[in-house]
Length: 158
Image 1 (cartoon, one colour):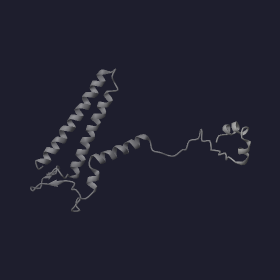
Image 2: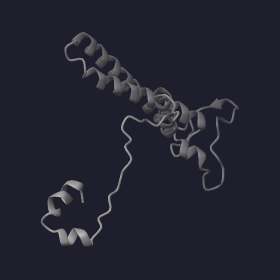
Image 3: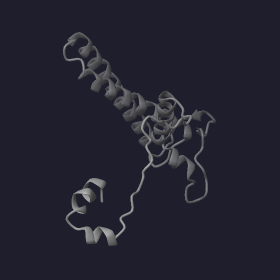
Image 4: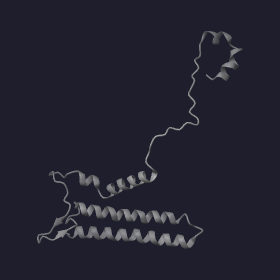
């Protein structure tokens, strides 16, 4: 009960208020005080978030967990002639380097979509908006083509 409410009903019901003690809680006043906890800047946190997203996009969880035979994924493979190959011959598995390249390509595609979104904020500067649309569309399209190439190479056996 607030003090104002108690003052309003004190004269009307003195028998209740004299027999019941209503406690008053004094909450501390934190106005004007800020806790100074050292925190990293927003740029550092944003960089860490981007690193984590890149790790997720490249299949970091898949690369950390061994398969049913207990083998971890290989970093890079070789064909019978001993030449290095970077695309795994089957589509169900991947080399570590293939995952890193695919993650980087997907990241570039995401940047293309972010640039497309940024172009919508420049409706009065049409030249700049068109430039952003062109760059974003090119990045997204090139990303799609590169990923399709990787999938086709994996299906054809490397």
